[in-house]
Image (tube, one colour):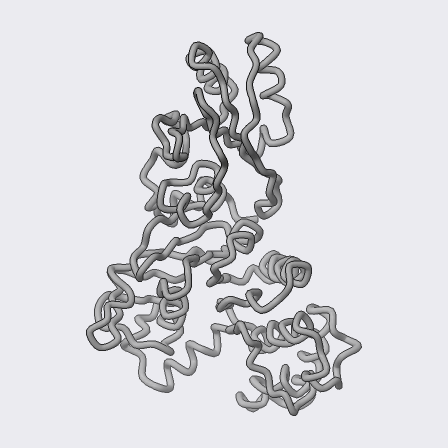
Length: 350
């Protein structure tokens, strides 16, 4: 669906994007994450030709973006809807007119426009706001109008540029649920730019971490958060005060996340341990989690063998939280520049 190879982007002498490689599979939700200024939005805008790039290749639906003339580029954008952080709605128009606008630009017959707008209003849950002025809506409602407008031309790809960063947590959750529903219902490919890790965990099948315009890590979201490499650890900034002795960070894959394996370990090995910290989080359609425990040094070998036997990912941490050892089956121990084919095999898009 989308293939980026060796992409370089400059603003004058400033190197904004450097040697970016990524492939996005049809029907998946792909996250591009990083701090402000990392190059996320610039990369997104290279995909639909709103930004020109100096080197490399950006192929979207089989077409090289930089080789397209104005008419061909316009046709490409017709198949790529876009959702914005600040909604970008026409404030003096009502909801109907905002959603209808792309259809009017492409000279769609009025009867078809009316039917399509009604369909989209039902999809985003705003049937009762059809003729309301957009400046009378809440932020979440305005973003729903923006989503409906982006879907008006039945695009194959939906680009989301910080679509939830202007919303409160409860509204963010409802918008993410809507996007997830749209992805499943329409099988539409989504590219989600965000600095919010909860967005990536909630809806993205795979993710790319950018820092200073450079790709830091890419792979299936679940694998990366179950056993994050050091550069991702710095970004998510999970800090706990570690205790003297041996600290082990355990991560629970989907088939173990609701099992009491750690309690059973203490009973079977007849050892005591302290809990340093932990968290359960929603990852797409699963609840996954991690736990940091502190044990005595003499119990280390027995504990690690037990964890291996029960298919838990583990990392032995130093006092600063850096990884000293980890089991070879942990995702963080392998090459995380995962190809589209292997990523699809490791996590099927439902």
